[in-house]
Image (cartoon, rainbow, N blue to C red; front, side, top):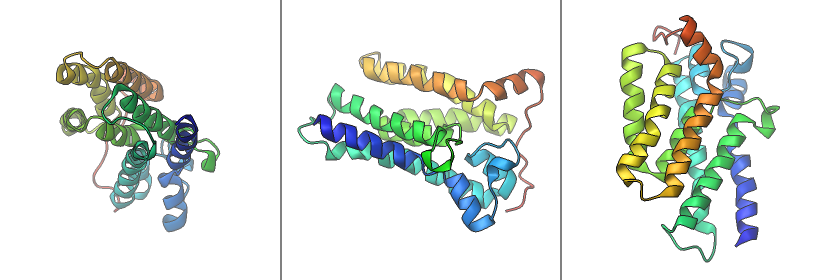
Length: 209
């Protein structure tokens, strides 16, 4: 079993390392989004630089790649489904995919912040919690039009959502929710500074598509 876990962890990282913002931008728009806007290889900057169509494509792929990486758990032999170990290995594979997204080996280790990939991660781990967390994101976004504020708000709500849904019965999920929140906060430190200064720009839907 250990050999499978190691191999699939590496594969999960490689899946996460496919930076859709970078590669789709280069292939179809002849643009490296990391050279423009926030210089971040994620869906939000792609939206700003290349338009809504490109941003949506990147968002969907970033969600799917972490979700797909976690499905590798089904190929690990002698593993009882829905056990704590099963959940822990799912989290391990998802974490490797997120690390790949943030530090992609195929794109000079300059990736995105992991928000869309984290959504795919959460969907694979706890679909109901993912839906509620995404709902928090949408509410804040519709009010503020600021993606970073929406992402941070959803991240902060996530541990409480997990605790409420699981009633504190799963230590693994509780720890996961806290670590996931910390990761999102850490990747948004620059955004937090801009938010505090009132310099974070809202999304404009008048961009090219």
